[in-house]
Image 1 (cartoon, chains in turn cyan, orange):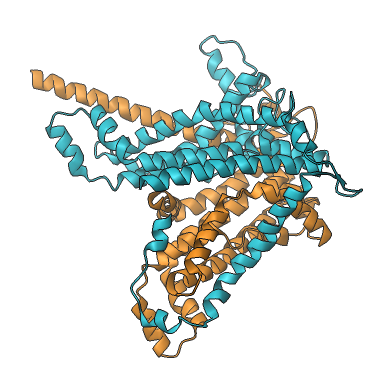
Image 2: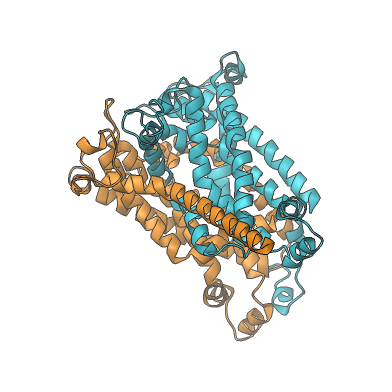
Length: 310
Length: 281
């Protein structure tokens, strides 16, 4: 990212004249910084402050030191549970989805396949739908008694499966939903990257006797490596900030999802429950902060990784 | 003979490949079809085994009761209002800041821009609790402004617009200045019209993000009439015994249809928009 900043344009009179003592450029960027201060910076600090307190939002605020954090980390703490869930979900879908997206992108990028545009549009379509709507659709598809999936399995003589009642299966369902929705998005990112690989490279490899599979491993993968990292980076953030999908997928009545037995509980869902169901603002802020630190470290790691490579 | 066989084999491979792609497309579309079909079913058919993909007695009663028994029409309007004002205001403020970063020189510019990029690392979830408390104090609970304001100037939007504005030649701005145009008029009358493709892409991205936003409106919107459509869909599910899928999917169809239409209308710009971050990394 530092590269963009360095890419300084050649001097123009428009810029030169406006060099000293001009307030206009500051005026133009001020809305961002003012909004940032009010809606991001101040809340971020306040959240930090709150994480050391116990408060239900109305009564007195009591300082409790690190006890909110300690509670989250202690044995059977729900925060660890939620992080474990997301880690499992991450490994369930990210490798498959990222590799799948890359393979699809190479397929649709080659001149070998026709109607590429149509296939691309359809595979991308799930991304432009409302998460809430499609999560309900998955919930109904997976319904034990009335769902299409179990009907489909019954054709092969497989007994009805209570998909959303088993911790392992529920997590797999959640992973499939995420893969379904984001496969096309990742594919499109790869397609954009593949456009920059000159076709001559593949032709040369072919002349040298390389099979398509060899070309894929020795040309495509090394050249799209930065995009692979970018996709994994986005998936990391996405997985650890899951909310809508687990909230809806396993919910019954007015209960919030996250079940069965907290198998699909995500950190944000925990934050929501702590903050807005049990009104434990201190604990909820501690959850937010722990997640913040984890994501921030992931982000820094990734930027360094990517920035160094380029 | 051998040549012919090789050709046949390749042909077979190709057919397999197409079959795979067609199956994949079917898997992608199926949950949407399932939702669409259930929206036109009576409750008795929804909770019936074996399930049907094409409703036996199609009905629009789900849609009717959505509008008669619930303020869903109002909810859709709320979503439209919130999403379009969020998109319009964000576009304005993001391009304004991007204009400044792309076309001016001022001290601290590079530092401020780096800082701005850094803000993208803060997950907005960390602000949920404090903003909720803050909104309660300034009485923004159950108000649309609370949804529109926080996302109004965002770093991604500024980054995106700035990239595009680098393409606009400085000479054009110079000549406008010589003609006596003010900075703000240059922005409105030269920069914005020239950024149209970028504005379309970003506008659609913002619109969809706001239309789909669930968590924040779920927290700050309270009364049925003020809900956005996606939160209203969640509210339909209230009884502990069964989920009113008919109503939920009727609402879902109405929420998803505008998104798909919008996407198909500006597909090229939209995809260029979402991929721009990946390529520039």
